[in-house]
Length: 86
Image 1 (cartoon, rainbow, N blue to C red):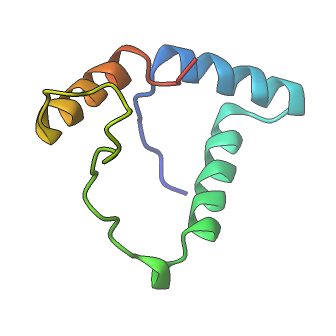
Image 2: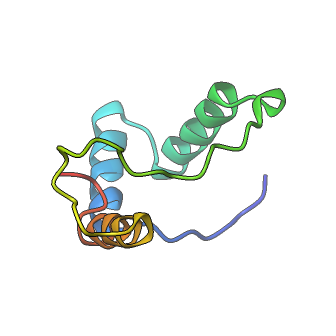
C-alpha cells in the first residue's frame, strides 16, 4: 500500500469525516472507496474529453452585454466562492 498526503477543502473534509464515522470506516477507507467508485464510474476506455464550456445561447438568461469569456470567468469566480453549490 502507498502512503500519500492530499489536501481537501475544510467543508469537504468535515462531510467526509462525518460520512466515515456514520459507517464506522476510517477516513483512509472512505477515500479508497471513493477512488474505487470513480474508477468504476469512469472506466479507462471511456476517456472522452468533454467539450469546452459554452454559455447558454438564449437571450432570456440575463447575461446581455457580456462575452462568453466574461461569463465563463464569472462562473469560475462564483464556483470558487461557493464550491459545493450550497
